[in-house]
Image (cartoon, rainbow, N blue to C red):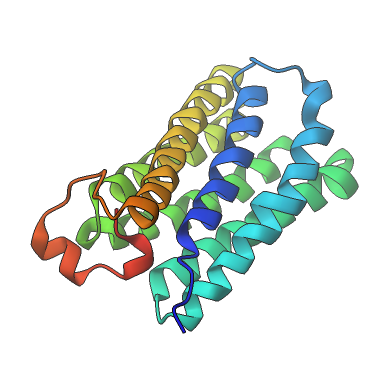
Length: 193
């Protein structure tokens, strides 16, 4: 039995939720739309992405398992935090929350060096986004948060592109995103583009 490729589900769950939140962070959507972001974070960014990670585990893809389950859990923690705990937490504490996710993302980015360029760029953009958002909270600099919002939009667009490439590759048997043959051979199937 051929298993479905879970990467597009995880990538789209990540991309769409990041896209919405980043529009709020960049000031393109008002803060009143955050409940919509939370709903997306619980359902698609969190649950669907976590499920994709579990499917990557059954395929033996440690990178995909770790990435999708971790960022799925991030979205759950973000939604729970905003919904239930945000009123009593200081901005510097939120900055540290974002900074530890930035540190995690930095090491995941290093893991992409042997994978494809799209993943490399997604994790690079995400790492920079987390750092900018963290600095905005730690230093009280709203401009960093706004720049982080734009960084998140870039991250979301890159993840959306890779998810779309995965779907097109599966449906049409083409390689939309060219990568070197050596890298492609070494890459887990769910993360080939």
